[in-house]
Length: 242
Image 1 (spheres, rainbow, N blue to C red):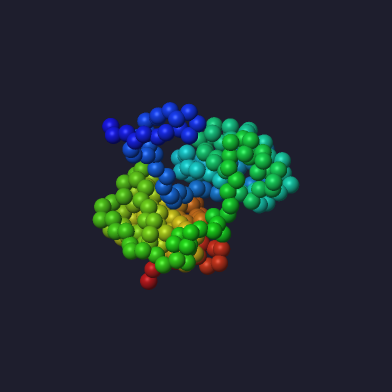
Image 2 (tube, rainbow, N blue to C red):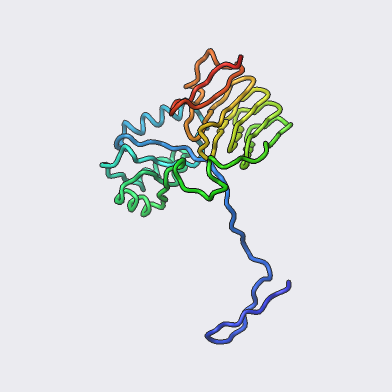
């Protein structure tokens, strides 16, 4: 290996330094589910959580979770206990948002991080939601269970179906020319004008700019229909394509 030589300013000793850096730092876009805490994390809370998890088995398994404390400003949260309880349910709590100074301090002590709100987070100019998007990412093969596709620059077009357990994410719109059975998250950078189009809606979850519906929240009359999904205010709307 070719080595450079670095001379210490203090003892003038010579240390070998690799010619190439041992690591690289890159920016990446990841999705997280936000759980809004509206009351104390007591037995009633965990019972409701378990009931919800039973409805969507394996859906939240090891998916990054962020705890929103916007409606729990006066609560003293035992974050270490919360993390243990979540891990016992195979839930991965990574941080909090909208917490008070005391809540942020307690969360940090439990190994969590304090995040700023996703949609209003200042980004570099080229990463803002209203910045021009790039070209579409076109996928000509079916998306299989366990796969995750991310169109960081613009729209995502799937010429085929998306299997249950798969996830498709796009900064812009999502087009699925087949059955949409997995999870579809459009407007990942907060673009509220993004839409989802699919030929057969059978999704486990659909989301635009962080506002989502699960399979239990989608009307039966819309299942297996050609639809478009869009935001109207803070409401996620699903309408048949005519």
